[in-house]
Length: 99
Image (cartoon, rainbow, N blue to C red; front, side, top):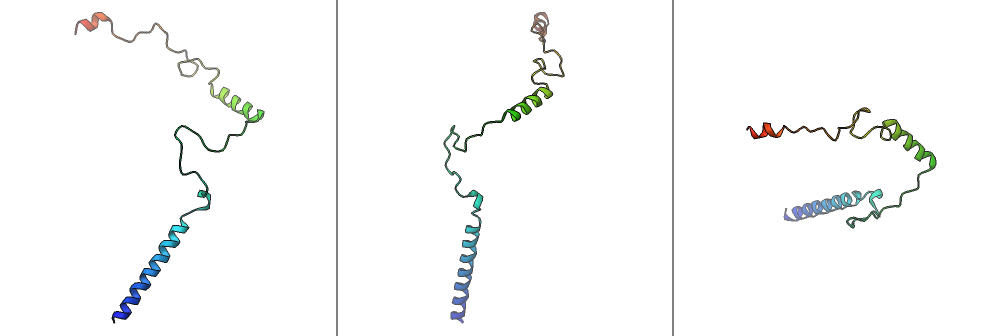
């Protein structure tokens, strides 16, 4: 009886080890291989960007212009003028002193 129990424990340990090893190796996806694991703060170590083509630049410029970023006045809104420099929203000093 003791001999059978020893074989079954060994078998369970062997099967558990094989499963754990296969899970550990299976978790290493191919697209994660060779990627940097240590990063330098403030330094980009990836691939260099490619230069934009003139057609892509023109498309981006047209999209920005369409969204109004190049033609709208500062201050936001749909072409509404921004706040004037003389607008004062604070209560008058005389109202503050009465409190």
